[in-house]
Length: 150
Image (cartoon, rainbow, N blue to C red; front, top):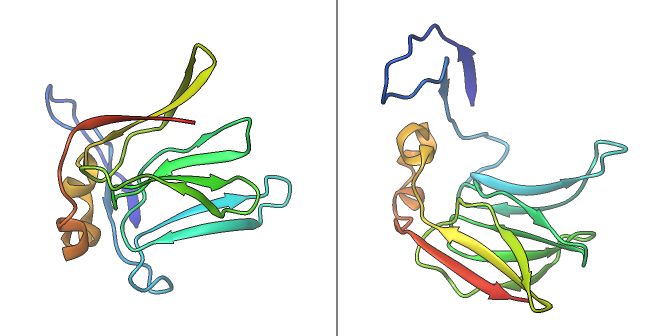
């Protein structure tokens, strides 16, 4: 994307960004809009990655058990091995693309992972070339909260 600062005046109810930007495809990643990338913080080098044809807007949740949870615009919640990036588990396909941040909690010693599936947000509005991609335009809209137990 290209991004630059812009003068903006606050108007109630309207976006207040203070920038202009354009989302464009990176020619080095043909047909790919997203990627989950794990970096070694000591070296800055990539340890593993999980590419995606669709944008990857979801947050990440790491657990003490060595799993990293994240959901894709394809409507699946993934559990990656934190060390290798191997997909250890993939949910059934949910009703919509995922842009929510996974959360976790325990009840009576049982751990749960929750995720909100509901495609929308800024990507369809300000996604530039990405939002015009037919694969992205076909992501179902939704709005459901899903809970899985570990």
